[in-house]
Amino acid sequence: MNKNILNTGVQDFINNNLTTDIMSVLLQKPVFDAISNRELAEQIEARNKCKNKLPSWYNSEKIYYPNKLNIEQSSSEITAAYKSRIVSGKSLVDLTGGLGVDSFFFSKKIQAVVHCEISYDLSEIAAHNFKVLGAQNIHVIQNDGLEFIKGTSAKFDWIYLDPSRRMVNSKKVFMLSDCTPNVVPHLELLLTKSKHVLIKTSPLLDISIGLNQLGNVKELHIVAVNNEVKELLWVIQEGHSDEVKVKTINFKKGNEETYNFVWAEEKITTPLYGVPRKFLYEPNAAILKGGAFKQIARDLKVEKLDEHSHLYTSHELVEFPGRSFRITEVFDYNKKGLKHLFGTKANVTVRNFPESVATIRQKYAIKDGGDDYLFFTTINKSQLKVINCTKIQTTFR
Image (tube, rainbow, N blue to C red; front, side, top):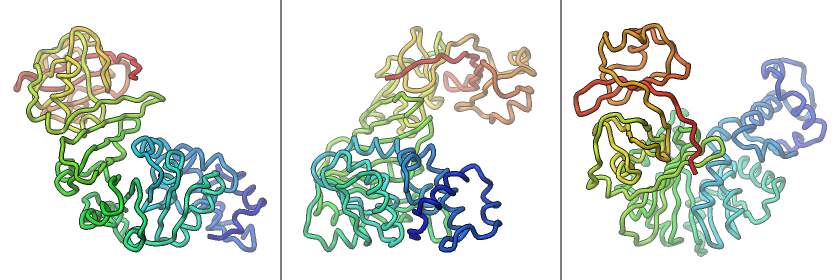
């Protein structure tokens, strides 16, 4: 950490060059004696990456930014704030602190937070930024989090881990055994230091595998932002053996789409099936990741078009966590049915269908965009149908 970067003149240069091409900064003559142009470029590039992801950092003066990779790997403010809703109590230790975004938001809910980070530079940067942001109840420890937990006699209300999902060659991984640290062999140790462990994993991790490997899972939180699943959050409680509750949330333009279900009930639930009615529904990405295909039909009293299509319909409009549409027409998938759509503009989606969006667009010269939504799907196990819809703007609360 080069503290000269925090000097007023340097900070002014960074703020005044946020829209400047990075290469022009790198190639010009040295601007400051104690700071390289590469360091300036890294600060500019990293700060720009925080504008939408970490606005509290971006809008605060004297923030020191790590390299852009650390920012890419960190939680966003919206997902970090959600994590803080899960925890409670007086103490929490973050064993994989990193830039400290999660620790910062935990500190708003927990009386005392310990931030462990093995990298000396990143630990120093996080400590500085916590002071800038006014987080006085975070104790920063530059150490491997697992080594710290092994050596301390303290116990905590919560332990949090976000294992690194990049290998030495920067290739992304998602299996628990490939992450650093691999939490599975250390779970017994962790549960001697806290009754509650919260683990963040890749959204690509198979839920069944995660449940089998982690054990004692009380809750699984599936977090999506703008219909893209960002995180799986596993709440592990000492001695828990009851059913696993799955909580899904999709943050969307200031609204929150939520749906909760019990993991084991999905297999024993029998939904109603039906043909397209007046309205069509497509679950958001968090629900699709969770696999609550039958329970959502039962709970919201909508009909499923097919066992594998994961599209739903109803006569009356219901509040649905996902996209809602008004059906204008339904026809068979053949040249005759699609003749009137040739060369038109529409948004195309395939669900349980033998052809891809690209193939369909090429076949029928359908341009992307417009107000019409075409769903190519299967109903009643074998009937290929096209459902033409218009989107309904709804506010889910």
